[in-house]
Length: 220
Image (cartoon, rainbow, N blue to C red; front, side):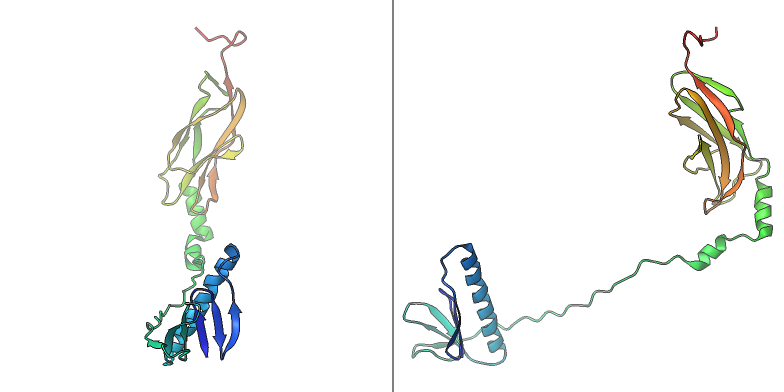
């Protein structure tokens, strides 16, 4: 026999007391109280779902008791709601997309194609700044330009390198570069392919950034 009372949880199976927890005694006992009631109610629901009769009665202490057998003459059968069964789908685990080997292979050039690309960009040159050029002023910025003998091929870009550091690739042939301190600086440029590989590059050019002072007065 399975029975549970609602005020002070007592779970009995075949008249054996399995759990008896007083309601008082702090938060832990209160939580245990409701846990026991929940477990017992689940058990009664399972009994009801299996077709067993559930009875409701009141014991000598005034506690409402639910059981699978009548405990007294005033015990009345009750109908419990059917348990809801929810079917869940197994989650589909997807792995990150792998690089397409065919797409990578499409970027590979034959030796003859590579020669044709280099020939297409033959004459690529840095036109500004010119070697040993001096920039005066306080804005610490310069204009850098390159000359392309032919238009850029699709997917190809220009990269300026200042003091050995590459700037972001772009298709523009002229760009304004700022943030220079006073002193000696270097610049070069290159054409890169879809993979970022260098196709052609210019020689490194040295230039200077100076501020007007007593030693370097502004020209009249």
